[in-house]
Image (cartoon, rainbow, N blue to C red):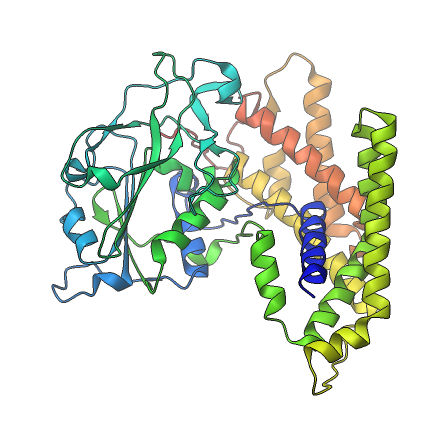
Length: 467
């Protein structure tokens, strides 16, 4: 039974990766663009998904610290909280800053230093920005960084270490690549566990948790796993300070976020806890989705294009085909015995949705995905969403001598928006959604490189700088 569930979990993860990927979508309508880009609505939304609730400023002397997570973003030197005492009382703390001595952690032998750090090799930078190091030296055994491949930073500080009364328990869980000052092994993030159960996570860049940066690399998963580790075992209250001021981010009702997909272990645990009839229903749903979306054919085409050696390519295709065929055969012919073994009392459950209904649901999900892609791109470039977008598109221009390229970009953007508004939902096939996703990615890259700009038409201003 465990082997069947493990095979099922692997297919669920594979389907999730092919059909959606780990993306974070955010919507903004009334929050000013500059505040949105630098804000922490996405981070707070992730915290809320983990059953953490905002609480009033922690001034109550009788506060039970074992139920509390304290978050300090930016310059928190004026925060009236003794971090060492907070941890000793069983509380957890997340400290994230990119400013020298913005937070005092002398008891732990830690100090933040900001000196315009840049990577030595361009391959260690995000895009062409050498002041945006990619953090890829990560401690795979720690819960915060397990399964993470890269964190995209933005003009960070570094964490230096020295002797302190509590420095022996410090663990470096993320390190910078080589920097231009030829420094190596500099700490980006460290973790600490107090004997009382209190936990500390210190990160040398608060911007990785802001709305704009959560969409890059594995930043969203890092935030999710950091919150999960810090909230253990029974912490349910969240206190947040931004630049030393107690803060409750606005615009949370305007935030839409798709959390990173679960790990294989999390899927296995969820499958084990499913009632027998629901497990069978879920298996049939996954099988139908694989068939309707043509995921197997797409996967095999991808393998066929990318595998460099013919023999290996044919072998891999054969193995994948046999594995999927075997699982579908097993799911069909052993469904009754599986139901009986998981549920001896013989409770049977029917499907809640017909195949036609599931197909219609998939169509509407693709329409929603297309709307989210365009909404997010327009928010990023113009500061406003799809509403009244026609006028603002005229203000989008490319810093290039080729007028045809700029005209084509605007024309393609108009066509996509008009298709969203006028086409029937069934028009949005998977291939069209993927084509739109590729184009939006290209436009976003041009915008990040300063080639695609918005000149302010439509009475909207756009702010970009972090600092």
